[in-house]
Length: 295
Image (tube, rainbow, N blue to C red; front, top):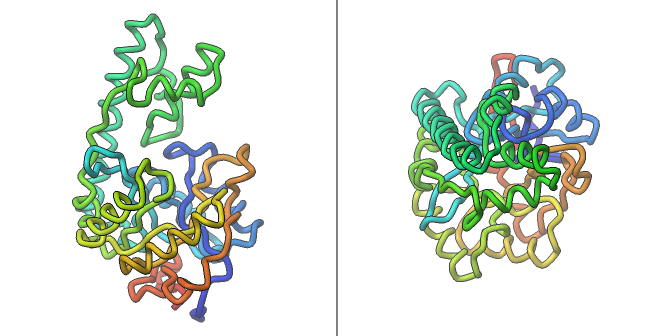
């Protein structure tokens, strides 16, 4: 298989219904193909079941399918999401971390359900068990509540957020620990959607400094629905902190057309030489027993 110098179109942050996406892994693959994506990472929250199913269904090599995961972590009591890319999906230590994360999710939902029952809202457990999801979270609870209360999922989610009526704090892995597990599995740790965290530039710089010190190597520069100034700001921060530039739509559902698979701005010229696909460990199985990847 030939190796490309750069990918034509990479989307390195997507979700299936194995976490909080709306679609099967096969749909994500096909949508990526139709949208001209050449390199796709399926990065479900705290699980790789979606990636494994997509790999089983993989046939024609397009788009190139990259092992991926999005791990929920805590840094200074703030939830931070770390993407793992190009890791060994058979790594047992990473598997144990993800199993632990899924157990934390189940325990959190049980605590939320107890609050719902006290408020006279029953049925969450049955609702979750009927889903194909293996890594459930608050997005599923919000959809359940929207159906029970005839409100929107967004409004229902506010009752689950901090200071909300049904809020239960998360007990995620520490950020540096998740980064370490990704590195030990041969992968590249990337800080997801940094522009969404409630941090000013000074605090964001501190986060990036500690992320890099822990072994983090990438920063998601391009995300869906970003303003041009956000793009340039993140590009400058990636250079300042020595982080490779990544790109991902954070696709969850076809209903949100503004975050469709592959619908991304190009990396700014200033960071194109530092694109994640130029990383020396950018390689992944082609599901035919070989490794491939641009760079």
